[in-house]
Length: 282
Image 1: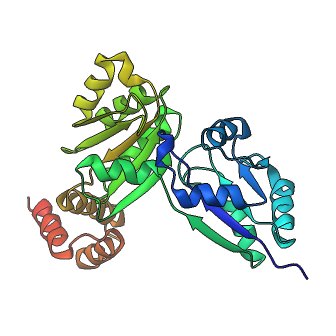
Image 2: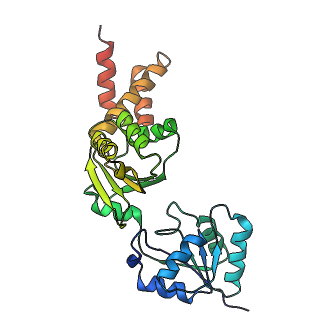
Image 3: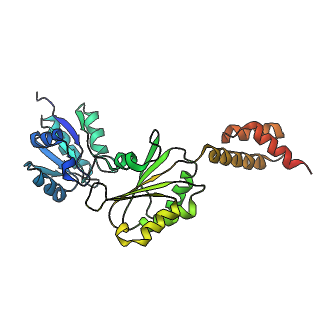
């Protein structure tokens, strides 16, 4: 019986080709084949690194058959490296279903760490990094994007997301119109590439920066959004609790209505009760 191969998840540079690790190069040279998101793009990188190996296309639209082919090769003892166009695979890139399938077949899956636009932007943003949430690419339509930003209004953690050159202006315009409270935003453009640039400021200042220079509207963007203050969340919970009390009306006592509303919303019960009583005073 053949020993199973290993599926390596290999991070590749997000810009500067020198950012790849010596271990990643060794793995890419030693595996039986490389599964790549875009073989044309990957051929250019491999050529720069003097790596000659067989390339197989694997992306979000490959389907179950393509994934099963890779699994069969692994089960037959071939080791395979999965790479994306840039950065760490599976971070807003293809690969989740393949890794899931490999694990279900008891195939060893090993990471070969390296560049990631998410952590690179966070590390230089100057914003809190002890807790953060990654949102990938936001919806393309403005209305759906604004719904996301409304949700971010009650997010205490730093939020990181990607944006494209085609939507960066509209994205920042939506942030200006939707974001509540003073929040710092960091923009990292073209990380580790020749024309890399950064900007830290309010939503309005970020929009002005992008609009004022056409060069700052080109390339790939990572947006890092400062989390909201605890007081903002408390105010939102308090408002939600008052709405619930109002909806309950006379169906229950004021005391029970406040208890129910506080339980559902997470608002402070005593504060809600005080507000309800003050509103009832003629």
